[in-house]
Length: 331
Ligand SMILES: [Zn+2]
Image 1 (tube, rainbow, N blue to C red):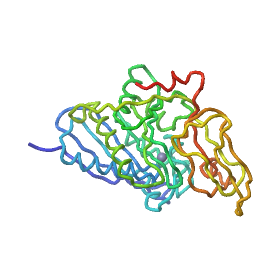
Image 2: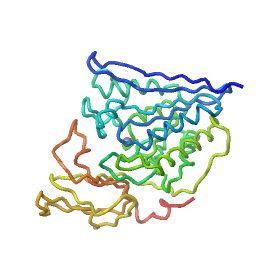
Image 3: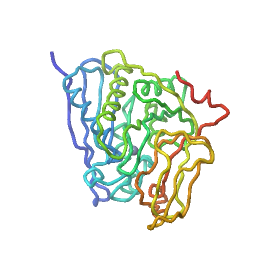
Image 4: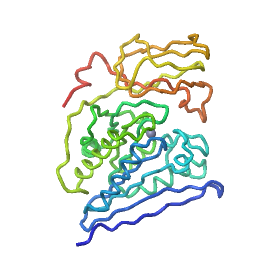
């Protein structure tokens, strides 16, 4: 009896002949037919729990028979990974998650995302693993883009149902969904991204949670045999609000990830170097704290390509109080 065929490669490219790109890809092909599923991580290269879960999946697929094709991209942003660079590309300071394919000549990041997109184009399913960067404490949750036909929405949601996290977020607003996610959905690739882990720490419980979700998703669509686990979840829906600094200084958060904040509640303060309060920040609406910046260092003027990564303080998902029971229903 033969095991899956597997092929490892480093996909290479060069942007304008100046900046090199390397993306490691391993592809497992089973003897039986089945869907094509791509698992990827390390788009944000300090989000280590996903990267280590991807390696654990590779180990498992080397010794476990599959149907169809499973492709694993353990580190998308290898230059950022090796430079220990947070969130933004070390080459051009752009945020990879916010760019789409189709403009590979425009910037290194767009070249990178275009190359990645071509690797994903034949997939039926994609899961992209994220977590909190070195400077972010993140509440574990699974955002699910709700787009396309009812059948497509059901297939997309099914990828999330095996994750051992409390919150699954149904996200209908296309403008708040990363561009690559929208492109894939438009192509009929059911895809979600998972947010588990914090502060760049390769914590075992976070790696386990990513891994358990992956195994359940692969079982759900038939790449792996077995009945997928179905832990209970709370489905949430709201709008995203990022509270940004409008002064520079030393940030002291008054909330932590997973908190529910009420209107008027103190989120935190920014002081000068000597501790004098420059500004306090308050919640305007009832909201779940998805993550907050644990780094005290805030330079609100640093906005590479307009992006507010360096001025972010708290990221919230607003919860409409009136329809709270409908929006926060445990199933
Ligand atoms: Zn990320």
